[in-house]
Image (cartoon, rainbow, N blue to C red; front, top):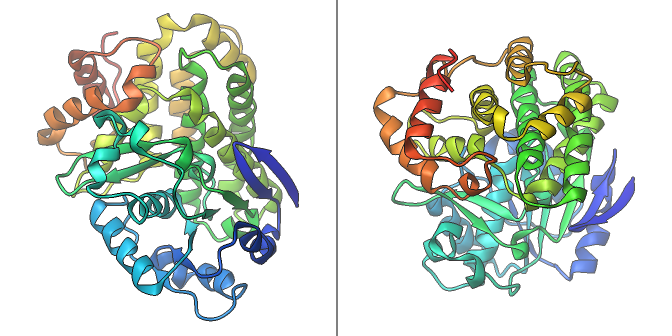
Amino acid sequence: MDLITYLTRIQFGAAALACLPAELALLGARKPLLITDRGIVAAGLAARVTALLPGETPIFDETPGNPTEAATRDAAAQYRKAGCDGIIAIGGGSSIDLAKATALMVSHPEPLAQYAAILGGVARITGAMPPVVAIPTTAGTGSEVGRAALITLDDGRKLGFISPHLIPNLAICDPELTLGLPPALTAATGMDAISHCIETFLSPRFNPPADAIALDGLARAVRFLPQAVADGADLGARSEMMMAALQGGMCFQKGLGAVHAMSHPLGGLEQPRLHHGTLNAVIMPAVLRYNAGHAAEKYDRLRAALGLPPGADLAAFVEDLNSRLGLPASLAEMGVPVACLPRMIEGAVQDHSSATNPRPMTAADYAALFDEAMTGRRGPQ
């Protein structure tokens, strides 16, 4: 196990979960609320956390696939009723994001919407929050070290809540917790990590340390993701993917781009329920083609990190990787209805990630990209 201090405190490595009691003592949290979902409970992973804690730990296990304002209210109510003084999140990005939003809600006045980034909420979020411990069970979101929480509000908008105060106080990254992840979910979450590394690297903001981390995380993920999908019991590959996901999260500070601006509103749909990492994987080729002429030097560096020859088609590379991993080739294949696209275009234009795309975006640009991603066929650039 290795201690890493970058953005926050990170305990990384096989069996790292064992350090939880000592870390909670350092944070002064004596009665944490455990936030998770029913799948994690059924898999026995939540019990591995509660076994390390004294007494009876209150558990909120109603985290939806895409965390909502309603779930945040329910978790906050349980936190207050149980007299909790901290939060532990175990699961994927949804549970971790819900934990961040819950910490915000129990320490800041309502309504929650006022803290959304696009509504001017960044400055309203203060450090007066209970400690949060994030324990990822997937290798993809990077939410364990990210400063953002994506929450679907009661009115259907999926908005980003962004602040350095939302970065968990501690991340426990134990790859042993990912050994039971099914191949399809391993692939989808792994492509999420890859999308983070690519989009943050292409962001026009100046942050060379983040660029270096993004390139290393990308090379690591592309090398080990097929291995983790093929053999889920390979602890070495699982460890490498957990590090790649962590690196993707470390880079969030630099901003994302059009891939995430498009996937965020799609993730807010009531039906069908769409997986964020899969959305990013399907959308990425179209966005890579769209941005190609506006970040030529960075595309060269991406090719070098991936071991590709000069001039190689990055979009085709991602399409091939998606195919090899068994992921869908289009949004239509995922069940996205054409009728929702006008609302998705509007959401993408307004999304906080749009501002850091390397090529300026308009509603017409997003319309063309959604059309291409819907069919999986290349459109005019």
